[in-house]
Length: 162
Image 1: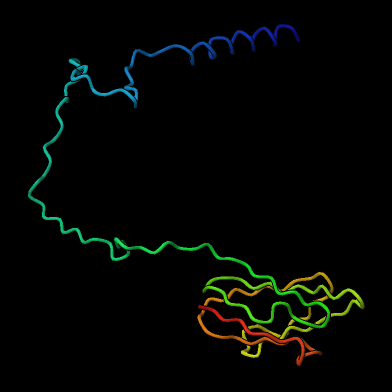
Image 2: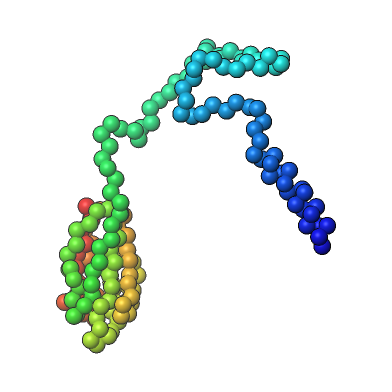
C-alpha cells in the first residue's frame, strides 16, 4: 500500500509544478497599452501576413430593426383577479400586450369551485378549486370578456389589452 502512495505522490508533484512554471511566452496584459515594440521571432520562416484583398466590394445594409428612436420594451407583467365573496375583483383590468392575467379562487366560506369562461373562446372552460389559479397571457390587443359560473351575473369582467 505504501509504495502505491509514494508513486502517486511522485507523479503528482511534477505535474503540479509544471502548471506553475512559465513557458517563456510573453502574453500582453489587456490593461496595458502597446509600448511600440513587438518581440520578433527571427526563427520563424513565415513571418509575413498575406495582404488584405481590398478589391472586394461589400455592400453592407443597416439592420432594419436598428432604429435611433427605439421605445423601451417593458417586461411582461401579471395581474391577479381574485374570485372571492362571489365576485371577481377587480372586474375590469387594463393590461399591455404580452401581459398575463391570473385568476385565483379565494372563496373559503364555503369553499367551492368556480368555472372560468372566456366569452371570446380564448380558452376552454376551466374549473378553479379553492386556492388554485388559472393563467392566460394576452398576445393580441382588444377587449375580452370573462364570466365565472355558476354566478355569471355577479362574477364577470372585462380585460382590455392595449
